[in-house]
Each structure stands twice: as structure tokens, then as C-alpha cells.
Length: 262
View 1 (cartoon, rainbow, N blue to C red):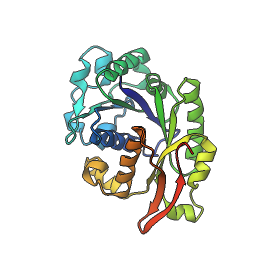
View 2: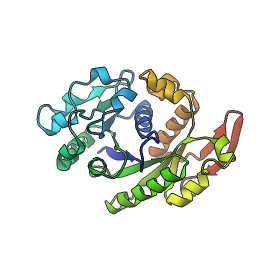
View 3: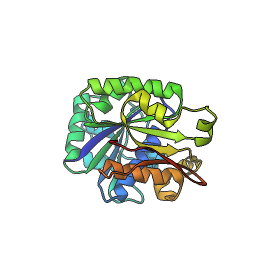
View 4: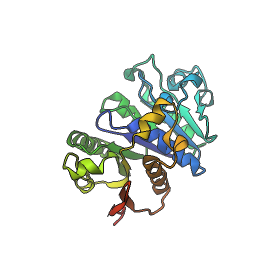
């Protein structure tokens, strides 16, 4: 059976959708079959980040309402044959979602794919509930600012109340220069506040915006970029490899700040 993982955050603007796309691609590059599901019903952004917006015919609400089968709605990635997108609907709203049907869809996908990544909308409303309900694990994305970490802490508590206890933290857009100037929270402080294991620290990387504007996934288009390298390492950690988290700057290694399980 595949692993269903919700990717979520306490607030918008932390790069959660970019994280979902790049982790999906990174796991696919490891030979895993992956479906990424856009759960942001009414908006739909994951298809744009992946450059697949012109290939969308059906969406998850078409499955829910019986207009198509699951395999008809899946969109294959342009470069990775074992990576698929299940798009959100743009004409429905989050209150239209039948959570039981979402659980059924994800359960079916678990029988055919190694990973199902659910890209949750920000906040804790029904879209969040629909994303968490079918998941067995969670990745919480936070940026190194007080409001993001505070909101992430609230989300962690809610996820635990739903019976999900395999929760890992991804710190995104980590800028060492700003941390050194005390303009961002440092990694250790974030981990201490949230009280969950970190599985990765993605550095601030201007290439992310460039590739998104090109409709390309960073790990495909610029695999040697700092953020792409870390996404690859996170995928390997998800797969169970024991790889220490190291925070680097362009001039070299700064330190081994955190080891999972230590």
C-alpha cells in the first residue's frame, strides 16, 4: 500500500505548493510512483507550478461527482513518467467537497502508487479537513518567521487531534544571512517551539521563482540549485535514509545543526 502524506502549513505564502511539487518529483526520481493532489478547491495552483495547466481535462471534483474515473483525471508530468497530478476544481468551493469520497479516492490510489501527496490549502477550514482526513502522515511547512511558526504550531496540534502522529517539519526559505542578523528565527528555535522532528531545511533560492514562472519544477529544471539538492535529500529521508540535516551557504559548510532521531 502506498503512503498518503498531507503537506500543510498554518498560513499561506510559505511555499507549500512548491514543496509538494518538488518532493513529488524528487520521489519520482528515486523510482517511486507518485500522485500529487491539489486540494485547494476553487483556486488550483499546483498545475501551474508543475506547468501542466494546459493538460488538465478533468479534476478531483469530476471524480467525486461521477463524471469521470480516477485514471481519467490524472495528468502525467511532462518529464517524469511515474509522477502524476490530480488537479483541483476551479468552479467549486471547499464546502462542496464530500470528505468521505476524498478518502475513498485516496484509498484507491494507495493501491496503485507508492506515494500520494495531498497539497492542503492554507488555514484550518474545510479544505484543510478534507486534506487531512485521508492522510496517514503529515509534512508541516513553515518559514523562519514568528507568525508562520506560531500558526504551524496550531496546525500540528490539530493534526495530532485527528490521530496523525507521524508529523515532520520542513523549514522553507531559510536565509542564513537574515538569521545571522536576527531577522529570522534560527533552526534550533523553530524545532524547539514546534516539538516535532525536522526532515529538511530548504534554503532561500531565487531559482524557485524563475522555474515557477517557466512552468517547470525546480528539481527537473535546475537540479544542481541549493533548494533542489535539499528537496532530493528530503525525499531520501522520507524513504527512510538517515541523512543529517546540514545548513550550508554558498562558500561552504556551516554546520550539522540537527540529526533526526538524535
